[in-house]
Image 1: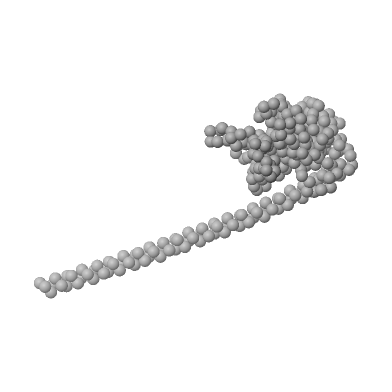
Image 2: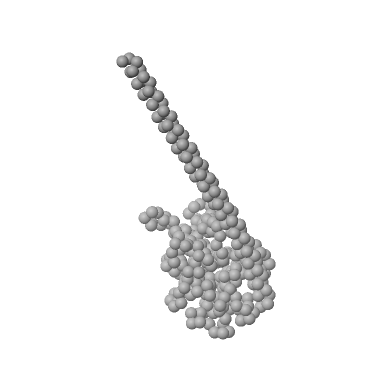
Length: 298
């Protein structure tokens, strides 16, 4: 290979799983990721938004996820996310809900709805609370009972994946997406990459590496994504700076509030001392007056 290619770059990712000639890779990927949740292996799918290299590479607003439908009508969405940003969980849930709701047209009945599954490969960690690299979300009650099988969201955090002894096809795909940019079939592939599916995946990477037009398009997508990431970074930094400024302002206000309270407490304490002294003087005068009266009466 002339150039090493990152399978996480959106045009490569969609060519891998969204191209008609790689339909078998998409089926293999879905069966690998969803194996423990499928009643039976997926045998065939229709790609709803197939990859078209010319349209994709010339349009910066191209749809970058992969959508497919199996024989029973279940819908699968697969998306790659290189960088996390604020409200990503909300976006993930909204995307699932949008795809699910789009099944019904005017006059359609709810019984026509079919399960919709979203799979997100995340280059950065989203769930900070644990070290699990796979998180599966479904609609359950507080006792763990599933409402129905229509909802499934899978988050695959590639940064957490560190398994070297590959035992399952799921692990094989995750390692491929995490380390694919380091692979070179001319130098020899590692043992875990010697399956038919992985060799086919490498041929897609090789196409982006060898064909000048595809490689230039790949570079253009990389540059575009770098620009987006830079803008996101700048936005996050600006947001962070504003938040820190707001926090400093709140701290200053709290300190000012405390200072005013302490000042008022000192004033109140001083006034209480004055009042106490005044009361003592008044008591002394009262006692003097009483003594003088008793002296006159005697």
